[in-house]
Image (cartoon, rainbow, N blue to C red):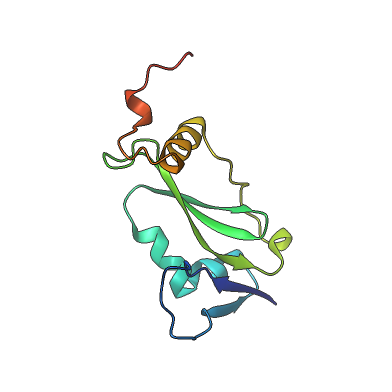
Length: 116
């Protein structure tokens, strides 16, 4: 039996409560966990993926997020037993993240003239 622990960002006040956990044996059971399943209902959902022991939700481009986005859902005890694609950051996502980290909230990858 495997287990996922929901990722709760540090800025969220949890009043000392531990994050939700859920046991699962199959990918279908993992996808049925309520705090996992809700990510699939958002527009532009592409797929679930993994990075180290992290379960991610990936989304395609939208008007608000022209390079797409990804979100951490939770942490899986034995990620090697979960058959999911490996998450990799796209070039556009990397450039957007670096601009954000510099404090440039106006940067949009699609607006840039980048070499091909």
